Length: 112
Length: 114
Image 1 (cartoon, rainbow over the protein chains, first blue to last red):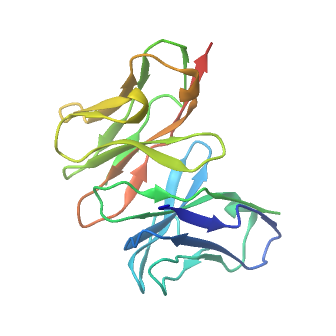
Image 2: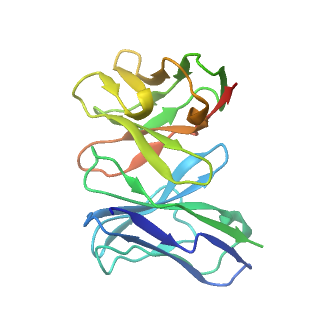
């Protein structure tokens, strides 16, 4: 089954404790992206990757890091989480700008 | 800069009534336009997309949208609402073949009254 998986689905952590949210896709897509969803703001792009070792900032990259060492994986790293990073995070992948983006199930992060 | 505006953060309709969710975009290049739906506690799934072919686009679950360049609109409609249509709907624009960036509107939550 074609899918994007994210782990963990739920995470509660404390300010400053480094964490990683994993994302994996099994569709051989070149393009992957991370979004955060906040009420009233829709989804905003954090980082994206157009291929292995090629990443770039989206609209809200501050406080986040990413890496793309393998085509299928695109982890999101929060080196020092803060409460304003409490949000719902989605990973997505696609083949081209005119095609559907496939979204993971989401990771709900709470930073206290 | 490209942007998407969805009018109405909440829309409430009776079961069987027409559903109309509004989306206006701004783009300096011909856009690719999408409607995604998010059911409670789930990720987003594609309803339909416009990629410069037919201006009237049909999607899943009886939804359709019409691309109107003169009005820079891509409104989503469904003739008869069903209780299962209750969800949040997002309009999004992709800004050209060389950019994979997807810009989302703020979303419209559809409530369906019995």
